[in-house]
Length: 486
Image 1 (cartoon, one colour):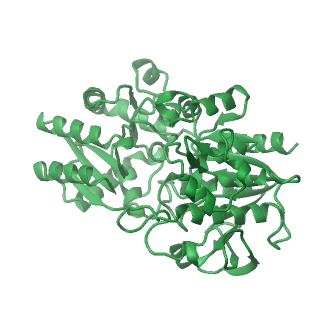
Image 2: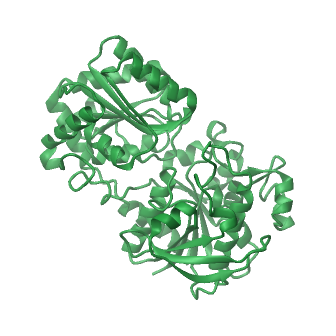
């Protein structure tokens, strides 16, 4: 049994803005189920304390560059026995709105100070200097908000091993030299081999340059980030890590208890691979919810996403508009929020086809489950996608994903070529070029296959029988932990 400290800026359901939160809950639980002593640590945001219910103060620490004491609160992850420590510094985390920005979507001006404090608290726990009488064998850090942890631990003679996982390289935590000075960080970090990045400070680079091993969330994304297009200026360092055997891609899993159509309390009617016929009741309920015609034979497409260019939402809008203008028998339901321009384009699409497009802005966890259960196909034409979780939810629910050939989408979906369908391995539809024309061409293939119910049903069965749990991936992480702590 190994002692693992899992550090993350968000953990569902205590705080969530994206897939990082899902991974940060389900992977520690999967490791715990494999008999590991894993503890999660995250900031004590105001909304987190409101959601967590019971907690107790277990320690108080003093953190460099901050005058007030910082409290460590203890609770457990919901529906588990996994201990979760909350770093309670009201000056930094007791705020309305999101973990990284205000209600208008603007980043908090002091994000560098907020997450530097969080990293210093994690280091105190990692070095058994927080009065918790527990020291990990390994610290598992996630994304830029934890990038200073490996960097600061590198100054310690006796320290745990460190892993740093990239969930999305596009967000690097970049700040000015003045901010670096204000944070009172060691001068030795400010160098090209350290966290200096073209005259700025990069939290992300701290994780990459100082961790004992770097992982990312799919094998294909691990290759893509070593190239100029996806490397965001860090491709040279990442290629060096790959050459040294210090960069590994491990596909995410999902919590198959939360995402299970056979038991999901959010959906209209439960179903399984043995009772696929009950899926139709969820489609009917979804059509009613969005005020669309009750039409069992119409191909219904779903989109649950942050409405940003990365996710290819503009490609989906253009493709659906064209198909509907050509009178294809399709419907679209969409849940999400994001860029104002894309939200407006979706409003225009709904106004143009009010009886074929359903739209809800914001995020609603129950509705997300209902869309996964009710639609026939799930649109995910991302320009890049480190791993992606919605295509895994879709497979679990027998909803066939339409994805672009990138990152984790390429690693988890098997295209419905004739050969793949004949040998019962096809689980979805893949196109390559990030254009609406390429997506339209693929969607015509989808529509053609949907007109053959037996072939479609066989693909649904194949999709639902895929193992999308954390078991295999957690075992791969455990193998890495063993190597690093041997």
